[in-house]
Image (cartoon, rainbow, N blue to C red; front, side):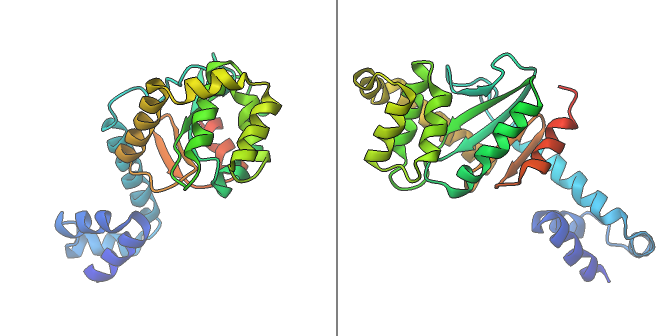
Amino acid sequence: MKHVLTVVVALLAGFAGAAAFSYSGLGHSQTREYLVSNPDILPEMANAYQAQEAQDRLASVSGDLSQPFEGAVLGNPNGSKTLVKFTDYACGYCRSSVPDIDRLIAANPDLRVVVREWPIFEGSEAAARMGLAAAEQGKFEQFYHAMFANGQPTAAGIAGAAEAAGIDMDAAREFGSSDEVTAELARNAAFARQLGFTGTPSWVFDDQVFEGAVGYDRLAQIVGDSDG
């Protein structure tokens, strides 16, 4: 039975949780009997474990995740609720999340979305650099939407998105190749690594850390459950 419970905990909370369960002494007969009689507690255990894991990951981050690169923010820049999105313009799941975020912002006037450019797909770094250059010119939101609407970040697609956003291209090219932009991309990659992210989109809201295109309903629940 101990091994069965360990497998269940592994499925619910991951194998790290199962190992902790196995070696913590919680596998003795009285505990097993209690859990068998009260199986509804297992999801609660898993949720508590995952919440603690998220807090540990956030505690490992050196730097302020909620402080955006100047201008790289959607929604209310002075909002009291902050959702952090790690994104890549070549990521289809990031693209599919765009209308969800737009809808979330429309429903939450006190929400700001800090966008962290994290180019992990081949060919996407040029778009990320242009996005930060757009932010520097106060035209991030326009570029962000135009770039995702254009599909894959080809040279033509990036140029088209920049033109649609009204960006000064000469200034953008110079700023996009600057040490400041390079440092920001490195910072975002370090944040993602510290948080254990494996892909985009990835998110942080308050003490919650999660990955993937989770959909509007889940995002609305997470943002709505917070008091700010």
